[in-house]
Amino acid sequence: WLPLANFIKIDLRQVKPERVEPMVALAQKKTQARLIMEKVENAAQHQLARDLCVTLFQGYWFAQPTMVTGQSIRPSQAVIIQLIDLVRQQASTAEIEAVLKHDASLSFNLLRFINASGFGLTSEITSFRHAVMMLGLKKLFRWAA
Image 1 (cartoon, rainbow, N blue to C red):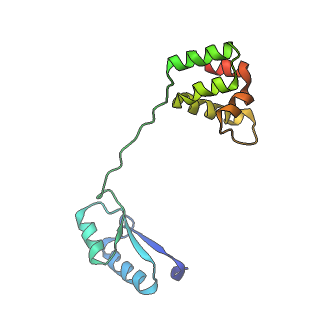
Image 2: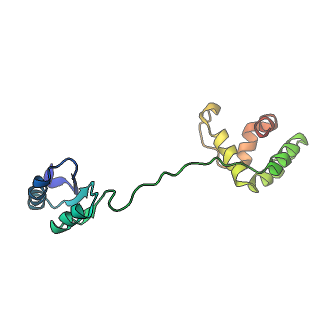
Image 3: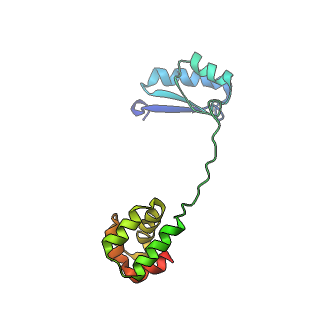
């Protein structure tokens, strides 16, 4: 399998320091695979990899990961009230669709709601017109309220 590999990763935390050089030499001799030095966490490890002609690296020495927290998207209250008002008046699908197009978060939440597995739809709903038609005014009102 070794001659078939495109990449070989060498994990510096798993390999004893005195075994890194012979391992790299063996991989370079037996394969055409590109070597990736993994878990490079300091300048000395980076320099070792460069000295051994390894050009691909991974590890915290380059950058620490940062946590990104998600935020829910909240639609504008005015748009929700406008949507509820249109549904109460039994407005046309085109009018309801026009309101949905003006608020990205409301649109996203509606499409996510209707495409949830609980509806049992066989195909994904991608247009507002189709979503409104599938839900009907009564369910759309309950969802918006």
